[in-house]
Length: 282
Ligand SMILES: [Zn+2]
Image 1: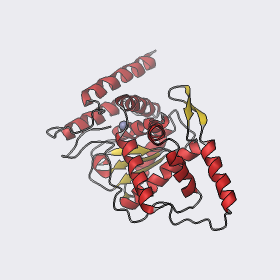
Image 2: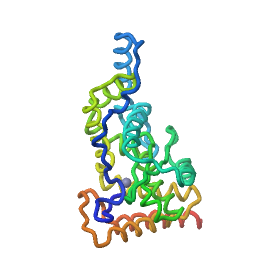
Image 3: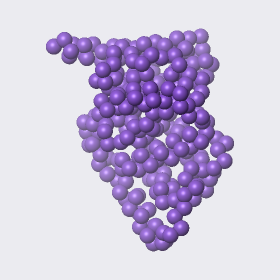
Image 4: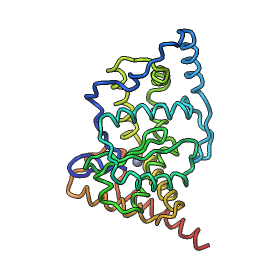
């Protein structure tokens, strides 16, 4: 979700800074015992294994992918580690957020990954998902929403993960380039700190700001459906979007051209809700 709130851009999926991190991720692990040949084989395997066909349960189509599910998770994990070094994770309400998130996730189309839900201790009105199911909500947003709206926002983020929006963006922009780094870090190697930090920043910006309008509409639709399957009122998504709209009122909308207007998002969600309601009355 992308709107402007409190003079900053945007509501959801805004970039948080990863700059200024003194250490690169993965630098604490070592693998001193691994022979150079074994390591080379491992890396080759990891690279080659990346070219696969994956069934996308959302589109119900086979999709060609460079990244296996394991590599998607590893990539997300590394960016998540960076985020958690740079930001305070809030324990207050953590159980609540995790309970709602897991309930909605268990009703999503994708069950080949373990989802995690954490709260970033910041007043920003924001939430985002990394490839591999690492989902974050900011305290600023959490504080202004009720449970069905929380189910909606987490559902939206789960939707991005389920439809593989993030990893597909990474793949489109970086191709194999990134996979080599991921493989090295997974093996405990120590790539140059600045290089890794830059890559983490790039991935973060890409998966947070790089979604297309259609990705956003699809995440709204999926989030509404998943929350509903989890037993929540699907109108939670509409109320969430309205609240985000209110928060952005009076502030200039500086968001990217890919950001769909909030009214358009609400009308798309209304179509989904009508379909759910007519299904129920049958
Ligand atoms: Zn989104």
